Each structure stands twice: as C-alpha cells, then as structure tokens.
Image (cartoon, rainbow, N blue to C red):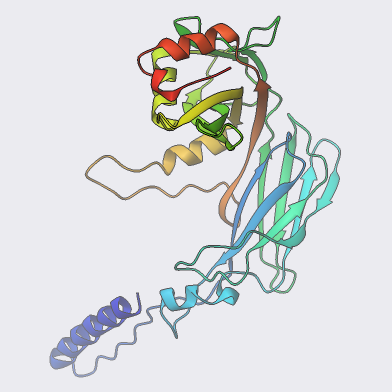
Amino acid sequence: MKQQLQQYKYRILSFALVCITFLTACENEVFINADYKETIVVYGLLDPQDSIQYIKVNKAYLNENIGALEAAKISDSLYLDSTRVELKRLSTGQIILCTAEEGPAKETGIFANDKNILWVTREKIYPNEEYEITVSNPLTKSKAVSVTKTVGVTKIRSPFIDQTNVFSVGPEYLTISYVAAPNAFAYDARFLVNYEEIDAADTGKKVTKTAIWRVVNNFLVGNNTSPMRQVPRLSFLQFLQSNITASPNLKHRIKWVGVSLYAGNQTLVDYISVNEPSIGIVQKQAEYTNITGGYGLFASRSTLKVWGIPIDASSIVYLQKHELTKALNFVR
C-alpha cells in the first residue's frame, strides 16, 4: 500500500513538472491523505436464545507515516482509545451496558493478534423486540448507532416422529419442517449424527465423534410461515458414507441425531447476500452497512437445537444392508 501511494505521488510530481515547463508561475501542492476522521466499525448479532451476546468494535485507520499493512500489526490502530457500548430495548427504555472481555486468541495473520477485545452482555435479550446499539468514544465524541429487530422462537415439526421422538430413515424423503419465527427471513439447517467409533479388535477402545451435514443453506421463508424442505434419503446415506470412516477394523454405533436451525432477520440475510463471492466478470462488490455514523452490521439471529434424538432399530438394520453404508459396520 505504501509503495502504491509513493508511485501515485511520483506520477503527480511528474505531471506538475510538465505544467511548470509551460506555466512558470504555477505552484501545485497535492495531499494524498485527507484529514483523519475516526470511523467506528461495529459487528453484532443478537440471539435471544443465547445466554451471552458479543459485540465486536474496531476503528478504521489511516496513517500517512507508515503503510497500511504495517499499521494493521499495531493493536492501537484497530481499537478506539476509549469505548462505551450500550444496548437499548426500545419498547421499555431498558439500557444494557456491555463490558469489555478478552475473546478467543486470534490466529496469526495480517492484523495484530496480541489481544481480541469483545464487548459482552449476559442480560436477557427478548425475542421479537427492537434494540438500538450505540457505540461511542467519550474522548473524541464520535458515535455510531443502529437498530435491529430480534428474531423470535422457531418451532420444529420434523424430521422426528412427534409421538415417540425417534428418528427413522424409513421414508424415501427426510422432511425438515418447522414453524418460522417472527422476523425470520431465511434459515440454515444443520443435521448432526453423534456416533461412537469402536475398535473392532478391542471394543473397549472407542471415540465419540459428530458428523455435521449442511442440509439447508439460506432458505427464504417468504410468505410461508411453515416452511418445509424434503431431502432424498439417498443424500443422507451419501453424507454418512462421506463423513464416517469405512474400515474392517472399525465399527460404528449411532448414539443420537439432531437438528440445528439458524434463523436470520432480513438485515443479516441482506448482508450475507451482498458479501457472497461474485461469479461474474466484474469482481467489485457493493459495501453493506446498517450503522449510522460508522460501518458494519447490527442484526439478529435465533438458534434452535433439537439434539439427543435416538435412531430406531429398523433404521440401523437398513444402514447395515444398504450398499452405500454397509461398509461402515453399524451396530446397535
């Protein structure tokens, strides 16, 4: 970046010299960088089903003395020198102050990783409510504000048998059916299979693993408040075949299956859509932000997990005999 700016500056100086040749009284002064203005960057997803909320706050940086990549290695370039983060439940006026905590260690890369500050609250966040976030720097008086409406509660109907709460691969299609939550605009669904991998020679040696199937991605709700997706049973068998190790030395026992549903409000879905990789010739993408006075995203999602569902005995027999899964050596 620094080298590009220097090349740009040299071109301007060369052009200025040409002008001086013809206009002896001409004087040019060019400023590559504008005056510094602190810009707050905010990323937050409120999840009413979670017990803790995380807000990420950074600042955009510009430094005329060093290159952008060099500045990215300095933590002070990434964080505000003073920060206040508050949430406001608009229906009641309740103010929730978030506190700074050290987040998970960041991997080595372009940006500084000596610290990872997250703004956190463990106060209850209510579904189907409007919340306002205000991030400010008390020293510089800069401020960023946004409002989002939280996603409500999803109710699942299948693929489990309601009366007995047991999973079966008997039907030709596995049906994922649920009652969409208020403010939910789109859903992702993940199917989980928790199983034991057992040493055939020594059955006391076993390891518990979980295979995760991304079965539905960005499924729009639209006007259908009771969405349903049917997935061929064959696709489920292919998932097992691809994710569980087949070996004569291994046996497998399915302990339970489950579904995780992730609902996003329209703001979140719009952000994801805008930032999807371009498949056209033109690679430039639009910038998406719903932060007034800054950049970033303030949206909501809702997570529903239905785990621990047993698989019926007839399904195990089916998996033992099917061409795609018999080499996995399933046992009851």
